[in-house]
Structure formats: C-alpha cells, structure tokens
Image (cartoon, rainbow, N blue to C red; front, side, top):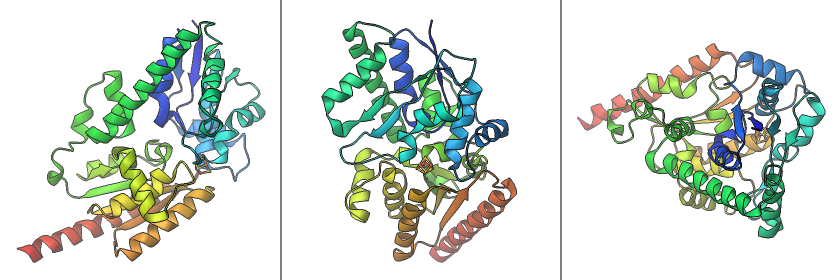
Length: 335
Ligand code: SF4
C-alpha cells in the first residue's frame, strides 16, 4: 500500500479529514507527522533564512520528520478556494520551497488549486492527482465527492457544536472525552468567555502557542475560535468591516474579530506571528475597531521562534485578571 505523509502543520488543521478521505478512498495509507516539538521547529528553522515566518519553519520541520516514513509527502499549492480571494503567497510556493530546502524529502505529491481558473481546471487537477493511484476516473470522482462531504461534515461539527479543530478531529476519529473539555451548552458556568482570533495553525499548535487554549480552559474560561462560526457569519462580518475580502485568511482574523467584538464576549486575544505582513495589517484593523467600539479587553500576542513561555503566561494572567475584575465589578453594580 502506498504511504502518503501529511505534515501536521499549516493547512492540515483545515483540510485533514478531506485529504484522509480522498487518499484512503484511492487505497493509500496516511502517515501523519507527530505533534510539533522543539526539535521539529529547530530542524525546520535550520533550513531557511531567519525572516521566514514561524508556521513555515514548523511545516518544514514536519516534512523532515516524515523523511523515510512514507513514499510521498502531500503538499498542495492552494492559491484560491473562493473567487478572487487569494491565499498567502507562502502557500503557493510550498511544494517548490520544500523541494529546494529539503532535497532528501520523499517525492512530493502536489496539486495546484485555483478556483479562479474554472471548475474544469479544478477537476483536471484533482484527476491528475488521483491518476497516481488509479486510471479509473469514476473512482477519482467518487473519492473527491467523499472528500468534499468529509470537509463539510468537519466544518459543520466545528460551527454547530462549537468545537475547536482538534476536538472535531477527535470526534471524527471516534475518540472520546471531547465534550469534557468544553461544554458549550453551559457557558454561564465559565469564569469568562474569551475569543481567540488567528490562523488555525497558530491557535491549535500547542508547541507554537505554549498551550494557550489549555491554559485558558484550566482557568475555567470558555474559549471560542473562528472555526466555531459559520461561513455566512464570517462573510457578513468581513463585509461590515472591510467590504470585500481579498485574502482567504481574512475570515480567521478580520471576520472572526469583527464578529466577536460585537458578540458580547468578555475578551479577545489576537494571535499572530513574527514575519507575517498580512497578519500585522489585519490585526491592526481589528484592534482599531476594538478601540472604536470601546472594547478594552483586546490583547494581541505575537509568537515567534524564541517566544518565552513565561512571557506568554504573565501576559495571559494579567489579561485574565483584568477581565475577571471587570466582571466582578459588574456583578456588584447589578447587586
Ligand atoms: S499568512 Fe502569514 S503566517 Fe501564514 S504562511 Fe503566510 S506569511 Fe506565514
């Protein structure tokens, strides 16, 4: 059976269920790289210049951990999944960059996804990918329909059941214990509701963000993330704040930021990374909107390779303290 390596980084958090379904329908076996560690980050970082953004360094570290573990590594080049809305240029060059900086990488299975070129080109690109496993176009079609359904189910799980991406992935794979971490049906039992905004690969990689979600939940806060909103909610929030989206990830930052600013959460934390131009622009937009709406509990955290855990913990504690004090004052005022 052909083994396909999937780096547990970047688009993994958005598309893993659909990729898994597609390749397994075609008879392949998937090998997922282990969760990020300091060694993963250091090995990826050693292959590129220092200015490269943190998530790309992490991604390359994951590819390195798959060397000799699989026959191919799957690295799609996703330019656009919505008409005239584009991905960051790093995603487009990912297969070529990986080939250049990790020559020992297993052969790369890539596919160019650009919805702007039309449906026909998209189908041809999918068929070209599937042809590595079968010559039967109907089998490839069946696999791609099943993959799309898996993607919709995953999105639905997160937005309807208010699950984070790792919780939804656990739910899909049949693990238990998911609901014990967050109980969205009893939000009032939480100390405070905190919304996180940012890319899934920053919010859910526990090594990169120093277990931010876990820390918030341990302090009895309810955590909300962009994936818990529907596409319609995100799109209408973007339309309110900036009009038409140009970048794919505007949903995760601008859309989620605008939505949560107006939804009565107790605090918002914007997560971005050093070396990301788009993030600094978008986060600034949300921060200005927070100031306009007089929402004081907004904090932005910039993560980088050498971010110290103690620094994150101190800022988080101060932020939560401020929120809890404000809540207590409100309760007293009402009494
Ligand atoms: S959006 Fe920013 S953090 Fe993400 S890959 Fe592009 S440059 Fe890196």
